[in-house]
Amino acid sequence: MATPAEELDVDGVAVRLTSPGKVYFPEPGYTKRDVVNHYLAVADRMVALLKDRPTHLQRFPDGIEGEEIYQKRIPQKHPDYLQTCTVTFPSGRTADALKVTHPSAIIWAAQMGTVTLHPWQVRCPDTEHPDELRVDLDPQPGTDFADARRIAVEVLKPVLDELGYIGYPKTSGGRGVHVFIRIKPDWDFIAVRRAGIALAREVERRAPDAVTTSWWKEERGKRLFIDYNQNARDRTFASAYSVRKTPIATVSMPLTWAELADADPDDYTIATVAALVAQRDDPWADIDDTPHSLQPLLEMVRTDEERGLADLPYPRGFSRKWLCAGVSGGINSGSGLRCGGAHRCRTSKDVDSSDNITAGDLADGVLHRAGCPPSGKC
Image (cartoon, rainbow, N blue to C red):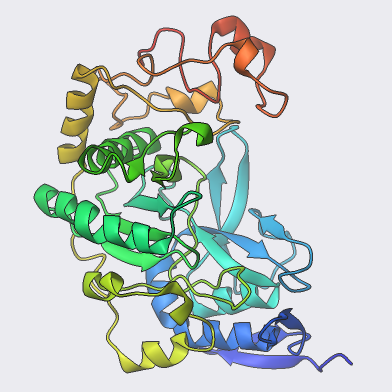
């Protein structure tokens, strides 16, 4: 039997909640209302982190065992209290995405069946210059959270310390670890992605048996993959405090480095996080206080290029327009740095039908998947 709708007062904004008793997580029996209660408990902290960020919604209107909808565009008919922000995708198309400015936006998203919120690394209205460098330590088969935790604490953090960067870690909500670094919004996506590659390569150099930057899965082995492409345009992370699609409703939990050293991701669920948030200070409270310059990492990019290490593959579907776009302030704008060339460019015989490669790409010798412009220079 369906449970009656409710009207929630979310910091002065009325948000309608329908079917609150619908089960979203069958194993523990957590309902839509349980998800909403979690987001009510963490909304203030989430708004501070998501404020003005275009945000995508990972929705499961019938629970995590039902249909999954990854929604990038806000519905044309939406409550007046919501705000939007126009973003440009790698294809060049645009969309009006949800812009989080108030807790009501988060609770509305949960009412729409959203389990996980995925923010961009930019803040409106400037959606071309990220203010966040993101590190994704992604365990591959044969590795697990303990490996990601160890590399984050023992390898990545010392590199950040040497660069003078302050990193803010969180559990991914799965088996991985995410680390965010606030940066000055002075560089474009291409520059930030290249900086992320330089950082990933340095971690790989220090732990080559445990870490890889190889985009090709067959080359990774039993090593952590640092997904440098999470810094590309329209590539998003689960936000801090977001619920994840796991059987026990884990949460992507912000931590201190000391907490991360002993963390177990299964300890952070929608049944536990509200109490933890109420009991402790916010470990990310000062994340916006010290935005860093990318220059130290861009110097590492130049050093890598002198060693013959240029760009790495983009995800499939990235248009050449965005691989070597001349955007003011970018690494590709007047810097002499290369946006391709030294890494392997695949040919037509290496491409399968799922690669989204056009005839024009093959004629030009350019593959979206490899990200190799014909000249190798921007």
